[in-house]
Image 1: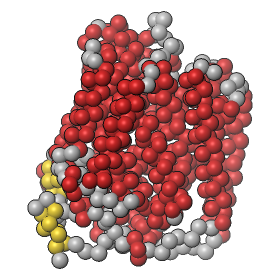
Image 2 (image 1 turned 60 degrees about the vertical axis):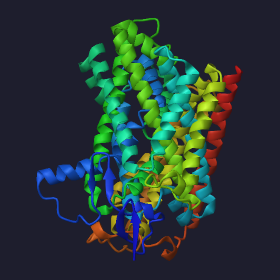
Image 3 (image 1 turned 120 degrees about the vertical axis):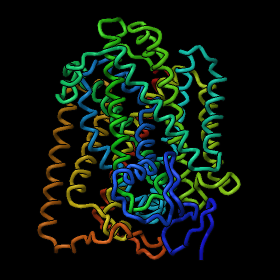
Image 4 (image 1 turned 90 degrees about the vertical axis):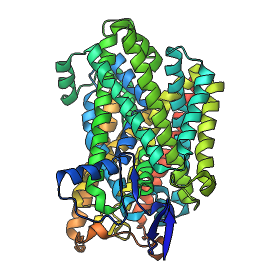
Length: 548
């Protein structure tokens, strides 16, 4: 039996893939790989052509991460603290890779989106929490993308309403072509636009030696008196660099591009290309913003990305300001692409709707309606809300992303240890140890954030005590886990043979994992705490907006 998709006849074996449009030729922005092309890639030319066809998911998810919120956060760091927080980017490189490599494996091996896997493997309760979290955070993030559009348009002298409406129309129309390949070509072209940050860097010419030093030597600027403020900014950097929507987006996009385990190594290269671009861009923004405001009245008084453009123009000329505004506009649009698709993919996955860019609007009405609806709603909010509220929202969304990331990382870790789901692609002990440590650090940062919201005048000593306490708990937990592994009956080693052709069986054939009482209590406690922390952050933002 065969099914015809995009004029390609493909077999329809019994697999876990939920949408038949996710089977067929790989049609990327820079090349195509036929479904029946199983020849080994032996020469350099063949490998390069394969890589070009695969490039897309890792590149888009990473460049989309340097969006309007990132421009605000990195600009804030550079304008208020110079390059002293560059070291945070270096620490986030392995976090970015490990998190995104895990969802890459999940997508290529299972053919099922992240939200649907959580729903099926952990039940409706946890699935509902994950999707609701994603939807709310993505909706707010999408608003910040349109805020970035208004700031860029304002600096360039373009009308606010017209710019927002035109941008929304472009974002919607780009996905409504009914062609995955056309959409990816537009997205990759926008990714290339992010490289504008590099000439801006050289035109402003910050001190490279100082940046190199601060990139590898940790420093907490401002001393203990500003520790609380600096910690909040660090949490924002984490939230804007490693955002929950990235997990849902890349897994579904890999599936929609029809990438299978056979091309895993090429997709990992794609991911590394994206990571390099996002880190270089982030470092460049911190560097040239620090140089532009050093020694001026604006140093330490960050307001928004529009003011950064003006400061760059005052320091290095009008051209630099214009280039930065164009880069901000480009970043906001690619960010809106990714966040909107992440939401539409997840909701389509959970509710069993057809959800693929390979389908025309008529073949996936619900999927496209969700995509267009959230874009239109975000644009409308930006047009009616006042500038002060929108400015607070831009900062608050990054903090919220940092708060919710531990929960997303926990589910990711559990799924990647589910042998029914990943089989020979399941996590090894080193990946588990690293990811567990990352979750511990994220929870610590979240606790510090919550404490600073509850107690605005919290002392630096109290923050250090929280970090020390969490460190002790983390060491005890790691010791317990290590001892348990040593004393427990040895598990069967993971057989990695033949994994290039291994795919997850249909979901209905899998038995749901039985969660231990300890794991239920731990997950419930984490979920409750993160929910409280999220509510407190929202309350704080509302109070600030109202001037209380």
